[in-house]
Every structure is written in C-alpha cells, then in structure tokens.
Amino acid sequence: MAKLPRITAKWAQTLDGRAAAADGSSQWITGPAARADVHRRRAAADAILVGTGTLLADDPSLTARTPAGDLLVPAGEQPVPVVVGSREIPAGSRVLAHPALGERFPAPIRLSGSDLVAELTSLGARGIDSVFVEGGPHIVSSLLRAGLVDELLVYIAPALLGGPRLAVGDLGIDTMAGIHRLEFTHTELLGPDLLIIATPAQKEIR
Image (tube, rainbow, N blue to C red):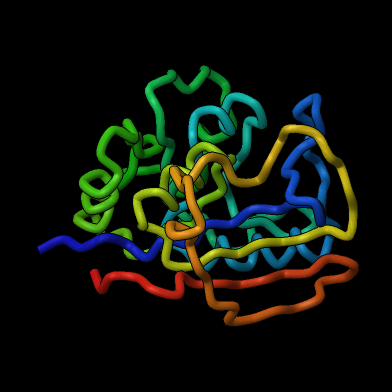
C-alpha cells in the first residue's frame, strides 16, 4: 500500500516574515551560505515541488547545484520536479530540461492540488519517499492547512522588508485555540542568516 512521502517545506524570509518585496522581487533574501545549504538538502530529496505561481514567476531549474552552478549530484540522482496547479508550463521553461527527466519520468510530474493527500500518496506509489517543497506562500499554506508537512526549514535573514508579501499565507486559523504549535529541532547560523528547523508539536502518525 502506497504511503505519503515525507514532506519538508522550505522558505526564506526576512526577520519580519516577508518572503519578497512589495514588487514581488525576492532574490536574494539570504546569502550564499544559506543558499548552498538549501541545495545540499535538495540533493537528499527524491523530488522538489513548486506551484505554478512560483514556476511562472521565477522559472526555476529545480536542481541541486554547487555555488558555481554545476550539478551537485549526478543527473540520475537529481530530485524529480513536481509542479502543482492547472496552468501550463511554458515552452522553454528550464524545468522542462531538468536532468532527472528521462525514461522513468519523461516530464515534470503534474499535480492539480485538488486533493493533496491522494496526489502526494500517488508520488509514494511511484517510489518518491521524500519531497522538498520550494513553492511560494500559497502551496506552503495549503500543505500546512492539510497537516501534511513533516518538517519546516526556515531561513531567516537579518533584514526587514515590511509590506504584504508574507512567507506564509492563510492557515484557516481564527482563534488561538487553533494555533499550530511547533518544536524547534535545530538552529544554525549560516553566514549572517539563521536556519531554524521545526516539526509539528502534535502530528498524527501516517
């Protein structure tokens, strides 16, 4: 029986919780050491997941790379790209030339996002046991609302942006009774930036 993969959600933010400036620009909130750490963690995952919003805005390659831009692990060991949403992937998008694509995965895996539990379970059925979520606030919030995130990686820059571009969107919480409590499992300085790793304080065993 297929099971849900382990879901790790990552984002970078300023100290005041912003993931982008008011104009939408977000490169780069954190410094080289934090970005290198992200790529090392990408390389350990079976898949990298983004929403179509992030895909269309940033045209990410969704690979694990060295600071020089080379592949951090061989093509056959690169995490498989997974794209959530109904919008088409434009021709010429970098993800379409992803080095992990081939006979087993001829194209990025598409999920509609309409039933995240079922769709993520389908990834498990295809041998994907770990998913690294690089999506923006919408997809991260959807996964958090559904209780599907096993681990959070939050990279915090010592900077302030203000404005409306929060790292996490609506979680459907109206009162303190619904607050999502977390446990900090690791903290680390990466250059000037702080990495906090957290897990849900209470989570059903899947």
